[in-house]
Amino acid sequence: MTSVTPAARPARTPPLAEPSGWHEIHLTVNGEPVTAQVESRLLLSDFLRDRLRLTGTHVGCEHGVCGACTVLVDGTPVRSCLTLAVQCEGAELRTVEGLARPDAPLTPVQEAFHTCHGMQCGFCTPGFLMTATALTEQDERPDDTEVADALSGHLCRCTGYRGIRRALGRALDETYETATDSQHPQHSQQDSRQGE
Ligand code: FES
Ligand code: FES
Image 1 (cartoon, helix red, strand yellow):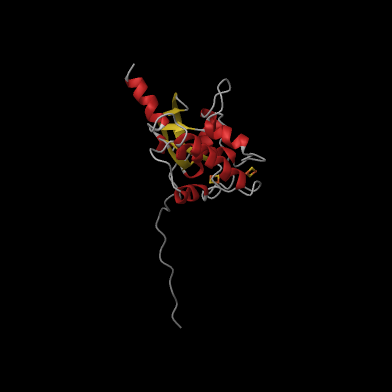
Image 2: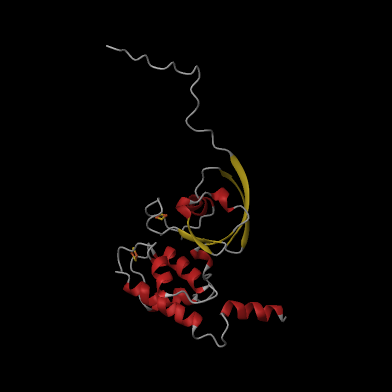
């Protein structure tokens, strides 16, 4: 019978994980400049909720499935539970708090969700609103496949999705079809600013 001698252990076992370092990050959150010291491993969702007290970003599954934690990073919907705060150095972030300030009217997307009953308990709503907002800010209206793809990244336990789909359709109609000229409203704003 052959006996197997266990390999000799190294004299010193390396640590399982290096101690987390700290970094200074600079970013913009809902139009406000933010500078913060963050640990390497700090999640963006925790940074927003615990450090900045922006608790409108909800955390459900914590592993990229439900979409509740979606925020916009440089205009792109991103799962904040799968993103590290340090990855946002220099980025422009928008959360649900940045859509309509308390003293301002609702955005077309928010208005459409309200009118079309696109929410019930509201837990999933911030994530849907941010993805819907990104869809209304594209240069061209997204087609049905793009819309379906975008919505497939979000789970809602209450609505059955019909109200959400209606709301998104309404917001897209308002954004892309009822603009007073043939240009996207964002471009019209940029043109008028350039003319000032
Ligand atoms: S909490 Fe981030 S995707 Fe569910
Ligand atoms: S409205 Fe309750 S989870 Fe979507």
